[in-house]
Image (cartoon, rainbow, N blue to C red; front, top):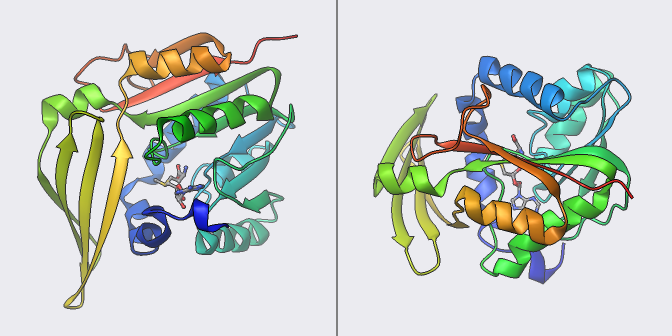
Length: 250
Ligand SMILES: C[S@@+](CC[C@H](N)C(=O)[O-])C[C@H]1O[C@@H](n2cnc3c(N)ncnc32)[C@H](O)[C@@H]1O
């Protein structure tokens, strides 16, 4: 990791780790089944999970015989994933890497940037680069999925303060929105045993029409977006978006 690759994410994802437990196994399993169906994954298919985090999606996919590669910038997450995959006797190839620096060429049948891992960079060209790198990593005919929060939902439901409890930890987030750049700044307070740690996030929020344009610019075809795993249309009432694109066959 170079100096250029550090940013708010360098400090944030250590205290954030317990938040993965907020997503139930039921939701994750439903997402995994949806991804397999929509991305046409079969045993032996090659899938790139970037960023892969602690393997929330990589591990269940690998258990279904899919050949998973994962890349992420948070080393302890990769270490946790490696321990879990070894225990489950799974082979998952892992890379410690910034998502802008992955360098695969025509290797994967499908790839995913999942659960709000997009829009992390202040420069618009860097966010576009993440999609470009995924495009390059796919075989001709390969499919990419971006699973991300919907800016239009945020506009309807914007709450400048939110909080949640995970086991003994309380997480408070104070939010502000820059309408000129569509960037949400969150100050997150992780409070446990009387100790408080504050971290900042700055995430560019996207509407579907913007992602659609970015996918097109990079070269994807058959771009589709859904607001749920029931393939419902995206509108301002849908919190998450599932955006798919296909790399054209040569
Ligand atoms: C919200 S988590 C999602 C993880 C995983 N996709 C999932 O669905 O569980 C975001 C992930 O992005 C990773 N990340 C943050 N900044 C990154 C960067 N610049 N390059 C690569 N990974 C990054 C974090 O380490 C974390 O694992």
